[in-house]
Each structure stands twice: as C-alpha cells, then as structure tokens.
Image 1 (cartoon, one colour):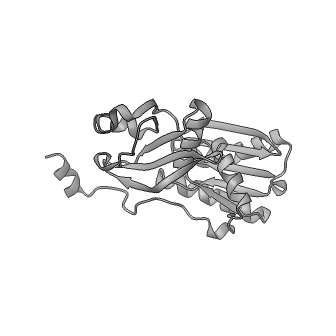
Image 2 (tube, rainbow, N blue to C red):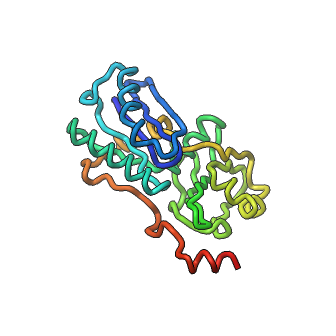
Length: 232
C-alpha cells in the first residue's frame, strides 16, 4: 500500500508518504504560505520515497475542521492531484490526526482535542484508543469552551491550541480529569496516514469530486453588532 497525505488546515503545512511500512514526511509552520509550499513539499516526500504520483494508491487530505481557507487549499490540491493521477481521495479529520499524534508522542489512550475556532468557540472532539487507532466518541462539534462536554472518568490528554486560547474556561472546567497537555501540536499529514490506512482497508476512499471540506460551521465572522455586544 502506498499513500500520499497532505494537510494545510491550520498554520502548519505538511506532506507525507506511506510506502510499504515506511513513512517519509515534511512539516513546516507556514502561515499564509500554503499555496506556495504544499506542491514542492509533496514533490519532495514522493522523491524521498522513490515514487511517482501515479504509483500511489490514494491521496489523503486533512479535510478539517480548521482554517476555512487552509482547508479549501488542501482539499483543492488533493482533488487536483487525484484527478491528474486518476486516484481516489481519503479525507481525514484534523481533530483525529491530533488525537493520533497525542497517542504516538505521549502514549495517550484518551484525548480531548480543542482547536481555536475563533469567535469564542472551539472545534472539539473526544477520542479513545480502540483497535489500534484513536477513535471518535460521539461527534465532532463547534461549541463555546464553556459548553465543551465533560467526559466520564479521568486520565484524559488535552491537545490543541484551543486549550491555550481558552485556558481560563477549559482548565477549571476539566481540572483533575487531565493527565497531560500539549497546546502546541498542530495537525500533520504524518499522523493522518494510520487513519487513512484503516479507511482504505474499509473501502472508504472517495472519487476526487466527492471529497469535501468539513468546516463544522457556516459562519466565519462576527457582525459589528455582535462584536460590540461581546465587549459589554
């Protein structure tokens, strides 16, 4: 199995190739430079793996949630590559990728993922290690930090910059349930690959035109009236 993954859903830009058990990856913090960097990055990881685009089985992409423009860039690039090479696309949640990274780097088996969604909200997901992957419990959602659902039990690992953006609300709300925190992690293509392998094996690859961004909300900015109300 050979997969090419890319992600531009946040401030980070990344690409990775999984080829018969080996992984080749690049990751860079590149706010507002994704369009210039993602294709050269894809070329380099393919070259490192000794592959041509036509030799991969599918294109994996971070489908969100995250920055609206970044998600659109990533999905658009993935669709273009897939159409050019006549390959399917495997969309992967950026929240799930962060949970997977928390397991890989910290051994976390329970993760609460929070990305700053702006407008005093977070993108939120709860994940538990099951059958070799971090798997979503319930649904991904966008919510106010004060409305983030509190899970049963303790031993949860907190990951994502939503935890630092809204620390004054989230920290006391979850308190003793947490065993660790990393607010610096951002979604990376490398950690989407294990999730994509499972999707491929389950037959969940899509035609390029069917791969769509997941924003979790439609509204992207507050009106002037709403901003003024929030300052009172």
